[in-house]
Image (cartoon, rainbow, N blue to C red):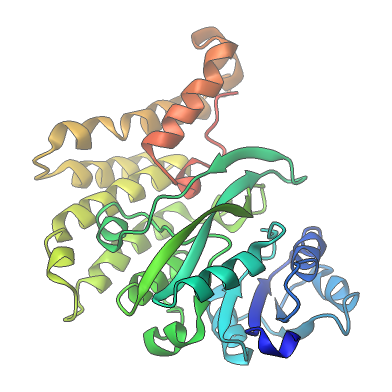
Length: 338
């Protein structure tokens, strides 16, 4: 019976994730779908990641290599798979029960869909729930115009999408997943699964918390510039070129401000509102970021928060900022009123 079910291949690239990897591996091995090929790749870790993987000998396909970076490791993992359906589960982002079987059933019911992505929960270092993320229904033009990567954790795709679109571009160290989905979106339809099936972990060791902010910011601009060198973009995508570039500058501004580079952040901010006929929107959206930055940069931030904002108002204000920057998990890590 298992042989009649589509083979689902899942890969997990891991780099120095010894403390979190077991939970992620267990989350895949405990899925209720019986036909899974699971490949875990150690990208030259220097901690105990390899020892963790060895505990699962015979239950996972383990691959070890010297450090080549996340994007090349993902490409290597995809090339090792045999399944008709493929998913990438980050080493610190466990799946929730039923994620695989739900995705397979969705593909079977919607043969025209080539990529599925679910809603997900943000969790903390000890897997404690922080907040829920309901992702929007898929719209390729919106994904470009608003510079918002809709597919996130818990995403699965048909094998031929990767074969046709190509793998991740190693030149995009921080935004390789988004860059891939922008290409994949040109070869087939995506769809949201309206269920919570995955988690994204927010912790001090996460890649998005330890980046060189200005390099990551510049990469967002380069990503849009690369997209618009294509000659096969639909007319509706071509129409939003200016908006897409402005929004990329807006995201870049937030990244720089978050990481303390106020000068670069303000430069990107000015670019994000330049020649924007919706200048009022362009002007006020980054203001919460600036306010947060100034408050958090203060050595007395906790005192300022308690003095300026009553405790009962902080959760609501946090939700407001998160909704203004819908899905902006990379921009707002750590930007919470204390």
